[in-house]
Image (cartoon, rainbow, N blue to C red; front, top):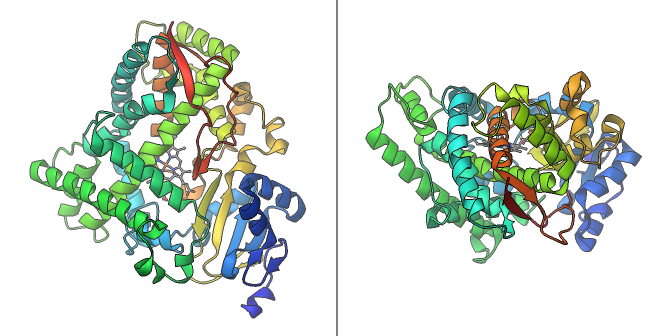
Length: 471
Ligand code: HEM
């Protein structure tokens, strides 16, 4: 470790041996914001910052678009199997997608992108499913008769059911105890995954003696419940599959596995990968939709401009179809601006799993945690001018198209979210479907939403209440 200190490490603040950087200690003590801390350090040290955490654990933070784009392409900086909790979430066997790496991850991800493209992520099919789910959500909101509703909760079932159909041809009632448990487990999983370091990274055996309420035991229970659920889904599919006509993602995987031509595929990999997609598919779209509607309610002038565009292009009597997305540039701009402004996952966490490496001439130690500071990219004043203002117009026209590249919510390079096109389509359908029939307002006295909401891998709205009135 001493020799490591003498290498050409990236710049960063002073580290106290074994205790790590004073900056982390202060953050832990004062409960400050990680994004603000890195904004301050970035001004001083530049786009690559080196710090140590407790027990000297190396943390390399990468900031700003150009640097992030370059590091995103470097597969050595995009591993996922160093933290103990990540290994637990990939079954300690490098399975699935979100918490695995190496050639097997690459092949599983390639399969997922290709299959989801052919199946439900085929835009027209997603549009039809989303339209139906959105329409029943609007009916439910109208039944609230102007009472403030927790919009994230109300729409969670509708938007999540679209991805559930694509993955496993299932729809759930929002009060279904299985669905509720899946959601709760997804939130717990993200909460634990957000921790920068855990004692189990240094001493995995601690997990054997940890108490019932420790993170290790809680996560183990979450994983067991996901395993039981996914195994049941897989068994049901095996009993009813018709390999020539896959109904959903699980069918497609089983059919491909049965050909025997693909050595990286197994039922265990399917189980863990399915868990990754359920968790990703539940959390991302529902939280972003909540933000989208709250910001729409807060900025009435933006809502009015969207409604005018919808009226002109689609009208109020028919649902949106495939071509409408391109014909409603302002609605699209509002969705992109929401992604940028909120920066749902302000830090993407990867790691360096197989030996030390270098980046832009700097030495990056083996086992380093790589933090991609997405917030710095989405809120770069040099690129966006007024990043703290919610201003969808910035994404209109040719300049807007150029600017979209700097919006980094879905990540960079090979580690990018596999469901980007799907997410934009579903959000478009829901936003149009809701605005065609509802006027959204904030309850009286509600505070404007802050994008510094509670951080739990993703940033959730502080107060997700709004009123839906018939239009
Ligand atoms: C608005 C919606 C969504 C947002 C904002 C979002 C965001 C993200 C982000 C930030 C990552 C990590 C990128 C990185 O580590 O660099 C990711 C990865 C992932 N997402 Fe999404 N996501 C969304 C929707 C979905 C949906 C609907 C699914 C399920 C089908 C999904 C499945 C996944 C999976 C499996 C990964 C892991 C990919 C990998 O590590 O290689 N996401 N997503």
